[in-house]
Image (cartoon, rainbow, N blue to C red):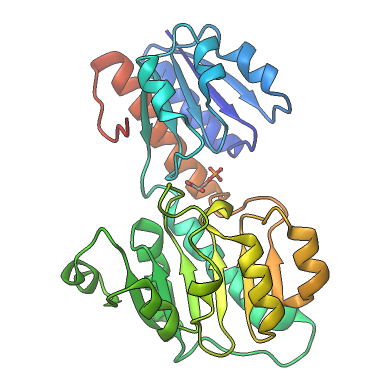
Length: 305
Ligand code: 3PG
């Protein structure tokens, strides 16, 4: 049996060593394809493997078709919109994620980016502070809960909206629950997105929603670029010079945004939220254990298809 780690954006060397150890201790052969640049390399690499561990790497019908022995794909991370679940199910391939394992890393990046932008890219121009400001969390899963914890350290007031959670669940986890997304955007000067990209959320962060934000609103996206209606947000940023947009997931029109809005926007050059040694190790180790656990003992905890 063989498990492949296929990562266009590699884990740290230490995390890879831990993954290899777990795989080999489980009596499974380890194989790695890192920093690949062509899909063809992935198609070749999956041919003889039973399991694949990936990050945001695209596992579509073509990859699944090429992987004749494949039984399991583990997305070492939270969002699995990069994996064609229907095709995986059709190929009798189990898909899992590793929820929560990289959540703190993403949450810390939120504040790194926010401070950079509200201090005017460290240009020396007077900026602003987070103390006493209202932060709204759109969706209240693992990342949002870590963001809430850090936000309280900054003295922020934390609000959340999550269509899958009752008010009591949100409040028990330490945020003030609001009754609708509109209310969240109306209430909070800062809104941080933590929803997955699904058919309900894709394109849903649009002009009509974001226009509700109070003066000097800051929208932060460490989720997925697809949830933003880029044209709508661009129109709003043109109309409201007080608004800012920060993303760890560059919009398609990033160059245009930067040309038009300058310091009011910031995008990481490469998606960086989960890119810490700690998060790599946490997610990688979990993915390795889950892969071996499934191949050897049929354990399918965290299965998503
Ligand atoms: C996730 O869904 O876990 C994050 O977006 C991290 O993605 P990455 O592993 O590609 O950095």
